[in-house]
Image (cartoon, rainbow, N blue to C red; front, side, top):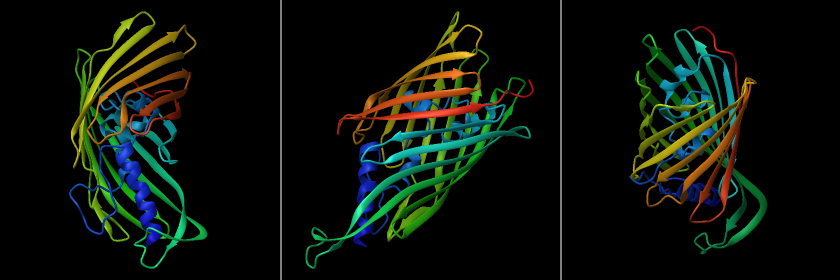
Length: 329
């Protein structure tokens, strides 16, 4: 059990430093403990650069992780993945595929948080776990989430979009594992004057139990809005905002903006993004996020930077995606 506690403690440290939720190893369910912290962490380079003010403007396969209704905006095969060197020597990544199906779009995705490894130690008698003898072996831990979603659009302009997703979240620590199912629902609407609004309820599901530690999933609500795009020749600018709340944490908000520059007729587009978050009191992340991207025909590469006030340093996320030519009108 000592090796499990060490890895759970590492997971708890990532939760405290990297998100709004306090997390600690316990032997019973607690109102301020949430399982599967992975579900609250970034899942897209483009979204992260905007401070994750992404719900109202999401238009690629990563919408699966933010608001499944926005999958309906994906009108052709889209494949993308991103990777981030996260805090405490952990690695955070996501991969998703979206494919038009019937009158909507189906999405399949995987999120992964790898905690790395820790030395296995046999605690000394009477030390209460504070001292022990290394065995020479190591133990590892991972959080994984598999998501399947579908979004469909209604109206002559596809202005109304609704969607749903189901997620299986799983945590593995040494030889122990546990899993839980969760569901998401979302809706989005594009007004004729260029405004976009969206809302989603995420991670409604059962408790996840791992080695006598039981906790609910991080139920989350999101509400987002994006202003009409401002155009000036080959330049565009779009501001956006989002409010969100994870159960057991404070309501937080973020302001974001994305600017693009289209270089001639080659199909190359350069993008710059920034976000400013009003974070909760237990969140160690810096308020500012920035990023950039380049689109070369059907291929897109994105980068995001996020700092951490409490521990110093920063994390970098890089994403690559491919989008086929849209079909139909």
